[in-house]
Length: 113
Length: 111
View 1 (tube, rainbow over the protein chains, first blue to last red):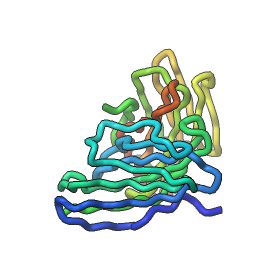
View 2 (view 1 turned 90 degrees about the vertical axis):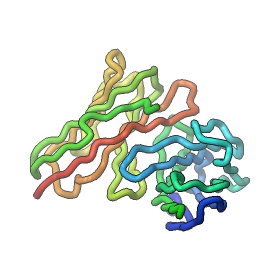
View 3 (view 1 turned 60 degrees about the vertical axis):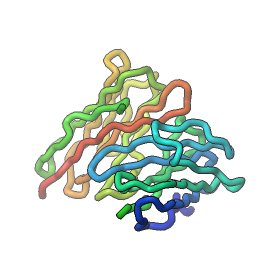
View 4 (view 1 turned 30 degrees about the horizontal axis):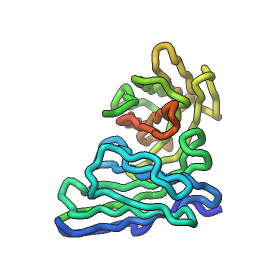
């Protein structure tokens, strides 16, 4: 069974540009989470989607947005990129929201120059 | 702010020794989960313990939960060099809409 897949693996953007990150959950999982992990730090909660709806978002500015498609895959968009947006962006999926374990992808390393 | 805070931030032990990591949290929870992360890659789920459980085992892993103290511990017995990684606790709130991670413990197991 395929795990959570994220693309691209690495992404280099210039300050002010937009970045789009993609995530495909495990088959059957309807919940998708996005986290930001700056170098050497913990995971900061960004967004949670379930059944196509945004269920919760973390303390991030509106230029961080996303969506979940009917097939439960998800996209994270970051507009007007800033240098401090450079981080590992992790996507995870679960079967029943936070009540079951989350399975993580390998992440997208975003570098803003 | 982080819901869970791990202690210690870093731990270095010899192969064969036991490693204990602690996690404290602030608000009531539905469950608490432990994850491992190798070299800044994706996280791997280790154990989920629900708020009405006090202890769970999985192989060489033992997790305890004390809801009165709002704390949990992860014990890795007979550690191996391959256990070298960062370990995170994550708490699921009762509203069921948030899974919050702590800052992690960096464990180094020396051969």
